[in-house]
Length: 272
Image 1 (cartoon, rainbow, N blue to C red):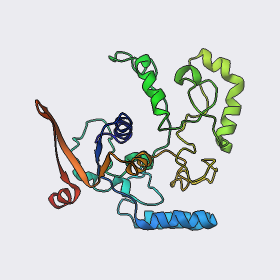
Image 2 (cartoon, helix red, strand yellow):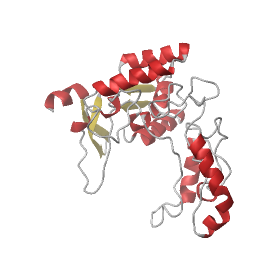
Image 3 (spheres, rainbow, N blue to C red):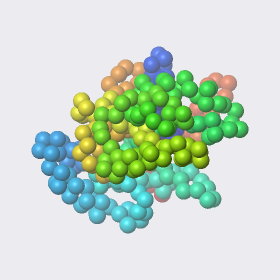
Image 4 (spheres, helix red, strand yellow):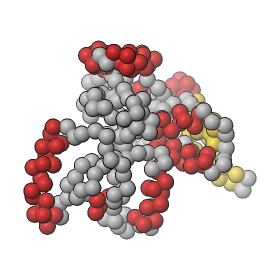
C-alpha cells in the first residue's frame, strides 16, 4: 500500500529481507490493444501506426479535453481512471494527482530522479546524510543516468552513463551555457544534464533507450522506469502476493498486530 514508488520499494526490500509480502493495490492496467500495438511496433517499427493508434485512443477518451496537463500512456487514460472516489481530501492551493493504476503515475512521469539537497531538508528531523544509504539501496531497483557536470555538487555523482544522446534542443542549450558556467555559478546558478531513470534494467532492448522519440506518448521499450516493473518481477517469486482492485481505507495498530480496512474496487464503483 502507499505511494507508488515508496510502496514498491518497501515491498521489494521487505521481500529481500525474508518477509512474506502482500501488496494491496488498485492495479488498473491499459486496454489489451495497447499491448498489441506495442508488440506490432516491435515487429515492424511502424512509428506512424503506433502514434495514430495512440491518437485515436486519446480522442475517444472521456478525459481527452478535461485537462491539458494529463499525459496518457499510448493514448490510454487508465492512469487516471476511478480516482474520483479515492479517499483523498482536497488541499487548498495545491493540485494533487492520484492514480489507481498498477505503477501509478510512474506510467506517465518524466523520469527525473534527483535526491533531496541540504536546502530541501533544512529544518527536517533527517538530513541528507541520513538519507544517503537509502538512495544507494534504491540503485538496486532504479537505474539513474547522468553526467559529471555542474549538478554534481548538488545531487552527487552516483549514476550510470547515459546510453543515448541529448536531443537537438537540449544539446544546443548546454552548449550555449557552457562558456558562461563560471559567471552563472557566481550567481548561484548551476546547470547540467538531467538525471533520469532511463536505462536497460527492465528494458525490452539491451541498450535501453534507442532514441525512438516516443517518450511523450509512452515508451514502447520499457526504458523509462515504471514501478509496475518491480511488481512484475516480484510476482514471479515465492512469498509475494499481489492483490489488485483493492482500496485501503484505514490501517490500525493494536496490541495484537495491525489491521487493514478496505474495499474492493468493484464495490467502490457501485457506491460512487
